Amino acid sequence: MTENAAASVGALVTGAEIARLAGVTRAAVSNWRRRYDDFPAPGGGAANSPLFSLVEVQAWLDKQRKGQEISPEVELWQALRAVYGEQLVAGLAEVAAALAGDPPPGLPDAVMDRVRRLARSEAPVDLVNGLTERFVDSARRAGSDQVTPERIVRAVSHFAPELPAEATVFDPACGIGLLFLAVASGTDARCCGQESDADSARFAQLRADLLECGRVTVVEGDSLRADAWPDLRADLVVCDPPAGVTEWGREELLLDARWELGTPSKAEGELAWLQHAYAHTVPGGHVLMVMPASVAYRKAGRRIRAELVRRGILRQVVALPPGVATSHSLPVHIWCLRRPPGTGAGNGDARQAVRMVDLTGNSPDCGLDPRPDQVAEVPLIELLDDTVDLTPGTHLRPRHHDFPEEYAALREEVEKRITRLVARLPGLAEGGEPGSLDGATTSIADLARAGLVDYEDSEPVSASDQLDTDYLQGFLRSSANTRRSTSASGTHRLDTRGARLPRMGIDEQRRYGSAFRSLSAFEQDAREIGELSRQLADLARDGLATGGLVPED
Image (cartoon, rainbow, N blue to C red):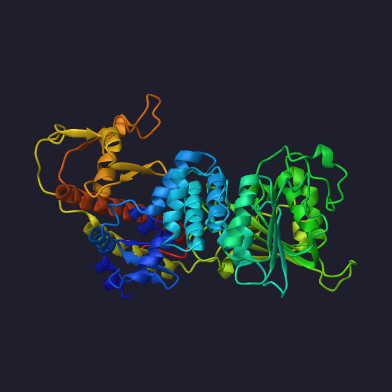
């Protein structure tokens, strides 16, 4: 699509954003694209990640009234949240069991009735995938580390080696099974998992059964203290271990045979998980570990890091962009290990360098193939110093810029974005006196009691065709409601008892909702321009300071 065509489309949204707008899952949006010939065509993006015109999507949703009605799947999700609260995984496991034909006797009627109704129109696999997707998105919004984030799953899958025929994949801390099922997707691999949380382990197994992954076995238990797979040797072990846990069982495991590279300290639980994973590999087998960036340089882990390097086990360290993790904005690393194929030291596969990949300057949603300046082959001898720092950025030389070309390209992009930014602003005319809408108002609490408002992951959304969600969200973000939603300590907290909306008919609501949508698009563009402007200023400053750029006459 040309630049002019892209500009004419206006704000573009992803399938995930359409799903949030309509209160459904991405699977439902995919079904709409297949079922309805009049669903808007992509206006940008790639084949596997299309973008759609927000204006066209909103018009289509309004026409279908899908943005104003609660879908049966949302009703099921809300019923699960009401019944199970913080134990949603237990509810998901119960639903998965019901879909598998073995409904638990304790499943509440409010949930079971909705499951039966949905099962008449949706395949069980689509329904369980939709609920899983909603659960993962809920964990992401809450900043929870309960599940492995989608971006990390994508990164581990990207850097995983090609699996041999009849391969075995193992995940010793598999959660609900997202990581090892993604890595083994499209193969006939045998998948084995262990998870300490009983509900997560049960749901992982049931979901795999519904997906018809015939060679998947997930067991419950603490992998470090009670290894359920002592004799298992896998071609690939993937693991996103618990981070920052000091009570991992060091005292009772001091003499454990798994500590081949050294006994981890109490503060280095991640290195205990790494050695546990390595102990479960066949000769030539691989390990991909998701690690906090601090494990690469902490003093307590220096000896184990040195052994990984000295023995040629560590093959690659990838520093992922900030933001790929859910619960924090710090960089996360992927450590790639390989057990030497032979039994002796001279096995013909000795490594002389570790590949360091630094993607920390990229957007978390960018591609994962590094540029040449983001990769370095670091000789082992350079790593084996007093610190054994395995942070990729420490070993990469500063990037050599083509300052004139990069400055011209960035400047052109900023100019284009600024020109388009003005078009994002809605047309607004003079109204009445400030406060003229304060007269006839309704509280969010009253709307909720009347059944017009529901909550999707703590976010109020319309539950009726008499209430426009964008109108609702726009007024909730007004300064008056923000003040009502701020505690005396200055903490922002949505107060459904205090927030109020002016009373309007649905047509007037949609007029205001359209303006609020345009303002949201304007704010998003402004944020992106701010980041581009920062990059442009940094590049220009460095270019002037190094001589790569000079002031024009």
